[in-house]
Length: 259
Image 1 (cartoon, rainbow, N blue to C red):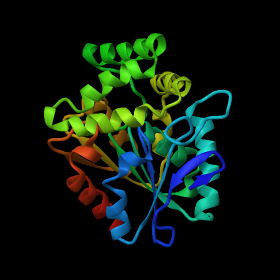
Image 2 (cartoon, helix red, strand yellow; image 1 turned 90 degrees about the vertical axis):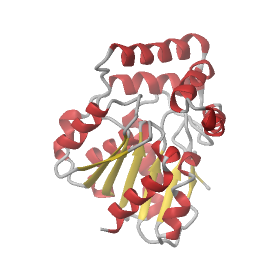
Image 3 (cartoon, rainbow, N blue to C red; image 1 turned 90 degrees about the horizontal axis):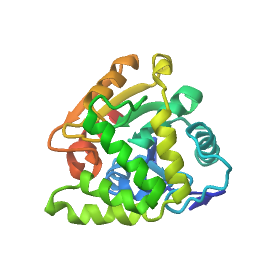
Image 4 (cartoon, rainbow, N blue to C red; image 1 turned 180 degrees about the vertical axis):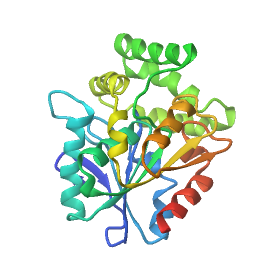
């Protein structure tokens, strides 16, 4: 379905607790393909939008940034959820939007699930900085497709992960190239750390033990700064934990939601 200019997956509109699922950079709402059926089976209502400029959602504004897109997201969710609070789950870039929602619109957020994400992405090691710089240069000079190949290989390095690698590339190919570059710039500069202590929503921080995109120290600080936040680390999983270890992730998610 489409709300205004935002495409939204809403397969169980009569379900109970709404769970908003926000995707990462270059991905689309379909990246939650392992979670949506599990949430529906549990009687909940997964709501997964394509953020503006990704997937089937065009971006028609002048300047893409987190706060502006969050306002668009609020308009879409307010109309669809009829004022009800929702659990908001976000992975990587999606987690940044989840944080912005909790900070700016706390009345909409029942609880937070933050997956391999950050409030401030400041590389602590040279290798991490080098990786991000190469991504930005490739995206700026050669276009988004040039650097998504590198990202896909980093996310899914194993030969047994070829199918997941190709799925990611097919999703990334749907991205607006201007938005992709703008998103990289915005995420590199954002700093929500001072706002974290104001969050009152119950929060779960989920980390893949082998995440090589967002450092575990960064995620640990995120959990420490949000009052009462708890943390779960999923072994044998990297940045794409929702696809690499869907059963373990879904169990952690559902355990948190049914409390």
